[in-house]
Image (tube, rainbow, N blue to C red):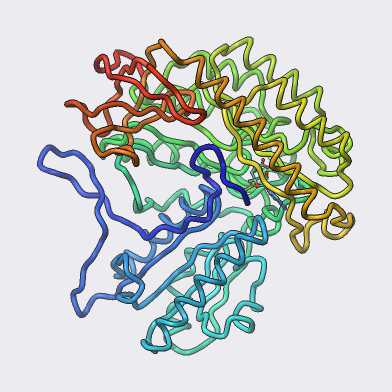
Length: 498
Ligand code: SAM
């Protein structure tokens, strides 16, 4: 995987967890959790991969807390070490195996330590994990986290503890996540699980199961709790959020079997967005990920209707070539995608748009690659996440199409895509020079502690001197200079709108 132009939500940077606390002004802040009472069990958790995994770890933390476990940020202090894994590319799995070696080193000195593997890699490898990685005690797939208390008892009794059953119903809608690694400002709220798209390159339908949506009531309740805690921004999360459909529970594919009443009263993604944006006018609403074939006019119009829905869409295209899109089993053509982009810009002229792109999918010719570059030229994305194709066992592509593009060619094409994206990102950030934009402060700038860092509605990072502004403030910032990834400016006051 290559370095993205902004922080990559799919980056494999496992992070130890922190806890949220209130300061004397009731402002939420985070600090590493360290509690060493002797009769308390401690767990340590690391998360890799997509935002869904980070969100799932918050569900796991909630379940373990109910079981009497406390969080620690040092694996050496833990009784239970968990690693929430990603299978999307081979490199992600290699990273996890390296971390497991390190945890096994700790276990050699501390025999009572238990190690659990969660998430997509657990689902993909199942029992094989216990055979291959001898020191792993527990293997839990993404739909089986409620079984953790039972599995822990199995581990204690030295029995095999594996649950990788994929569910038709599970959305964890009834679990209040324990917010981890949180800035107290932005939070993820999962609205769908699984994916029905069956893109031929992608392991997700096999590791996360079929698509199902979460009850809108529980979505609204979770946001209400976040609001009470002082959060200012939520991201509605799913592999394919635009495909959201609530008709009383169950798999999306069974919608046609639902009763006439259920079908008539079903809630789609545009309805859900409208509900959330109306109920919480002072919170910023984001969503991710949008698949082009499921993004409707209704959604675009709902975005335009509400000031608090951010003008930003993550709209992966994967390739600009119709031949490759077909082989990827993407349900859209290059022309469909252009039409969608035109409609977005027509309705929301200042919309930020980002992409995912795969270089070197099997059979990709130089002409296909040029089609990708020309598609990028048309859209001029604000930023993107770009990857070299990595064959994943079990996917349709792995079964049916030989991975025939040599690594150096994949790398060269990827480099060309990255370089073009850098130019486009710079083109986009330059448009902000001289303008005043609303920025939600979400952390201190990494470069200087004297600067705040935050994001515009379009999801572009902006930094500016701290003065008297605070974490979680919406601030109007006049942009003076830019890099390809960051706007640099000066605050002119608290924003009147968000
Ligand atoms: N559900 C979203 C979608 O379908 O667009 C995101 C899925 S995935 C978690 C994130 C990105 O990883 C994909 O959009 C794709 O660009 C990339 N990806 C998935 N499988 C890959 C593979 N086998 N090789 C390289 N990149 C891959």
